[in-house]
Length: 334
Image (cartoon, rainbow, N blue to C red; front, side, top):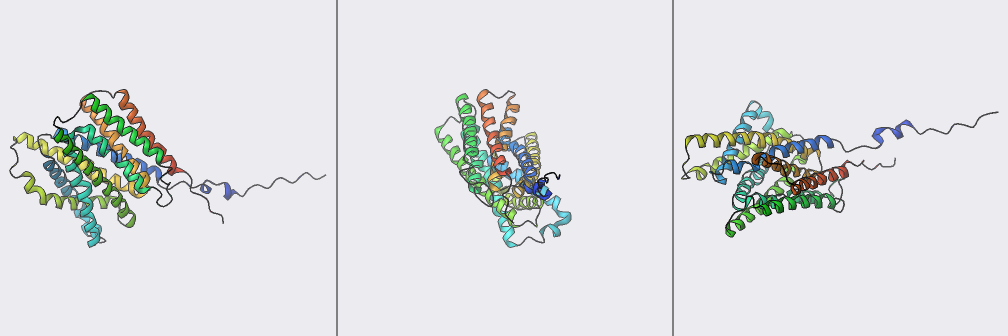
């Protein structure tokens, strides 16, 4: 008596891991986004550490140092790095340098000076939402409806941060006119950085033959050239400072250029290349998170309950957004 035939087993290829492909480079992109946020968070400390110097002076010094470091790193292979860069690319680099570096930092420092860090965080903290919305539905990424949850969590986190700081009276300017000027500067910083993020990501996708590191260094050279044009009006006729103050100013500006500009921008360019724009936008949340952590360390205090809830909302928004993008790509019938 013959036994029943064994049921046919599915072909091995149908159950292999590659049948449910995950989006390539997602984890590396996320970690680069976290690294960029950790380095960029230092930028929010600079206006407090260098409060005796004008926002324009701080911006020009930082980006002169950025340009010098970038040029020094590129010089040994200048021909190889610039051989594929034409007039359109140089024009784009100058535009990106103005939007994402010089103009943004001047507006940010001015906003913190006039309106305080809380109000500035409330407005500039909307950058992740603006960039995420701009990238919604592009390519194979999720649409705007699916991204509504992460965006609302980011908004809630930023609102909690700002509300808590305002109620505690931290960093608020006294004069209403000064606060209004600061809010306008913060809005300008929001628009400037959002435009930079979207445009920079598109250029990186358009030119995959140029590494993110080289694009960052070339941006530094362009930024240094623009900063050089502003050096005379920034430092001519300003208030006098003693020698030690100037030394501290240039050391801190150079350190910020190395960490936030050279290394931070290189991490951001890798993240922008590996992640969809809708997820890359959420990575900017880490700049706010690390800025808060550095602020707590600077003030030598632990975060309060509302601040902890705000950080939890920000991180939850990023995790939800990452989960949406980590879903397996749909299979196509043969």
